[in-house]
Structure formats: structure tokens, C-alpha cells
Image (cartoon, rainbow, N blue to C red):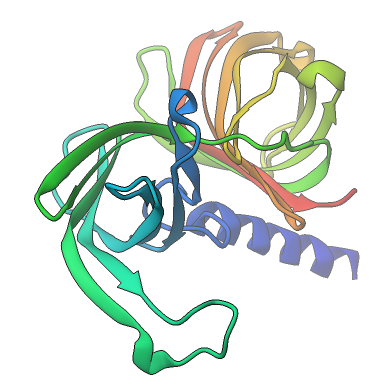
Length: 275
């Protein structure tokens, strides 16, 4: 039974890392509330499903009355390096009074222009939209409401592109156990156990400070020490997303070992929640 459980955990962790959990497989997950902090009072709600963003835009009309527009923006092929671009038609919708019975025959949709969501990082984007010939350009960021607590024990896996010294780059993967302590002030301690089938288990302690943009977390410049193998280094964790089921995050790292320096890029790590 224990062996079967271990196989199921490994398979689930591999699937989560390969598919990004229940989120978009091909891009960063851009689902969030987006805004400009200095322009509180309007915003854009973004919901992502695979390569489509459904965007609700909450703004005001020429008489300063609240109005809203919607767009289904599709991911564009051939986006510039470092950018993920979504574009779609923008619509104004009117309908029956909210306090009465809903009559679908009273719903009216009219195309007013287009909307482009150009994500230039995991947490920032340029949103350009046109309404009846008037173009608006906004540099938006994710809106933070409340910090997550990512503490817990997670059983899963990690995978990255590794280069040590002048050697070739290779894609490597291992099973992991993450014991994460999330303290007051967002101090983070990660007790990382790396379990390989053909090598001794490696135990590392990683410390850093957690921050968050919208629902997306990050731990930049986290210090790592792996005394059993004489290694030290720096990890940058980003796109940290916690759910009731587990935790996923991406990373890159530089590690100094007795045999020389190693770099780790395009890394993903996470697992199902044990405690």
C-alpha cells in the first residue's frame, strides 16, 4: 500500500509540473484582478482558460457613470521575446434591470473596438483598448488583497535545466519533500529534501522573504545551504501558487559545489499537500 501510494504521488506530481496544475498549460497563469495603484477606482478582472483570457473591464463613461466592457482575448503566435500577447474584440453589453426577472431578449451586445493584453512579465502588462475610436493604454499590475500562507509539507517533484562548469545542459528531475515554514513578517524557511533513485538524498535549507503580487508569490534571492554535499547558492522562486491541494512554483538558481559552479534554469517545483 505504501509503495502504491508513493507511485501515485510521483505520478500526480509529475502531471502537476507538466501541466501547471489546473492552470494554463502554455503560459503563466494571468488570472487575477489587474489595476494601476495610483488610479484606484477602476480595474480589469482577468480569467484565463488555456490560451484565452476573458477580461471584464470596469471603467466610467463620458458622464462619469459606471460602465463595463468584456473581451475574449486569444493568445497570439509570434509574440516578441519576453512578451505574451492576447488580443480580442471588445464589447459593450446592456440588459434587463438586475432587480427584476431576467429576460434574455433584452440583452444587447455591440462591438466597440479591440483589446490587447501584452504581458511583459508574470506580474505586469500593457493593456491597450479602443472604444468607439478612443484608444486607451494602461500599464497594469496584479492587485493584492491578502497574502497567502504557503507553509506546510508537500510531497512532489522538481525539474530544471542544469549546467555545471563547462558541461552540457541537461534536463533533470527528482522527487522532493518540501517542509516550508512561513513565519510572521513573511520570513520563509524551506527544508528541501531531494530524493534521487541513483544518488544519495540531498538535504538543503533555503531562507528568504516572501512577497506577493495579486495571487502570485515570489521569494527572490533566497540563500541555500546543503551541508551534506558542501553546496551553497541562491534561488529565485517565482510564480508561486498555492491551492487547497498543494503548491507550485518556478525557479532559477546558481549553486557552488566542491566540483564547481552550477546553474539551474526553467525550473519547476511543487507537490501535493501532506500537512
